Image 1 (cartoon, rainbow, N blue to C red):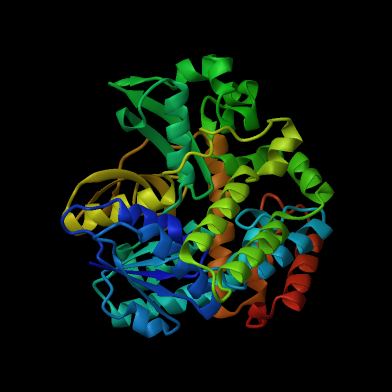
Image 2: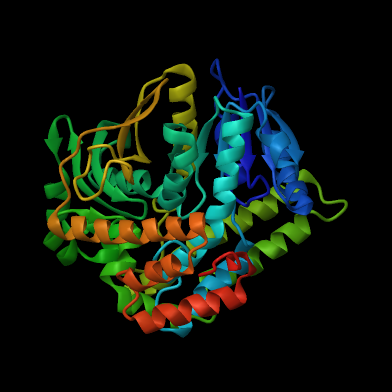
Length: 450
């Protein structure tokens, strides 16, 4: 089975390859094609993968290319994790937003809109190429903003594009551990949009254990979301939000912390990864040395994840359990095996809504539990969202639709509407200044006209 990784020089590619190395069952992926526009990044990541494959007799073969059509042709699965504009673009997203006193996070608020506007033209080109060159392939989308990008690609690929994110499964795993339950015994009732969802039930042996967890302040304080949101607020909600909802529920604190930080998250990662790629692509560097540099960089990256949010509410450092692996790469592996081998699995995925949630229409991509088999991912019936959650989902979906309209038509008016109606942008005047500044500083937005 052939897997193509778009964004194959990306920093997290070794996580995906590591998951593949642990799969020795029949029907496994045996060939991986890495595609990236930057040959130096491909060289660095190939070094890390070589170290990871050391001693694994049946390690999937690796091939690297800068030719997109070549990478896609013949693929069974296409894993898309591209970052249009790179981390330099992310720093612009953050800096412009913060200069206007609004959030610049890469998937939430103004920063997420800017990221989506420059990403969608590339994602749509990928979708069209896959439809033409590998019509039977399944696309697993991890490109952010994942739900927005998946919905846009679905216009060309239908249900053969599925979005993944590690946040819901990681939240479920942490909640299960807090209850003293093995995660594979827990059935999660989770619903919303990507980076905008709520865990409403944790069912173990037919019993919902979430009320027990919400009543236990010590258990809530043992994992990241409990510390981020606080026991009182979680009890008021009656559920556990995805960690990204911290940007909504504690917006002022998050903006203040980001404004006060010495570096934005994007600037930190840009400096960190520039050093890693420069070092790992140097002549004479061994695969083992590249692997050591990657692992040290990864641990620093993970331990500082959402550090400003934790600081803003006094949540402290991430625990070892919060750093536990098994994220999106395991979701991707389970998804591929379920489709390719008809190994049925239940996974939380980004798929077209159909009639799952009444807050949005049937074509809207939502993040919900799905049954996955050889025919793809099928959203399972879940309880409707609470009123406050449904209102927020509907509002953010309207923003996503405006971004898609702007990207597909070149409408600057639609782009302005996306900024102006977002719940975290509080003024049309601010929205206009944001769009002006982003267009001035991001060449990828030159396509936006009247």
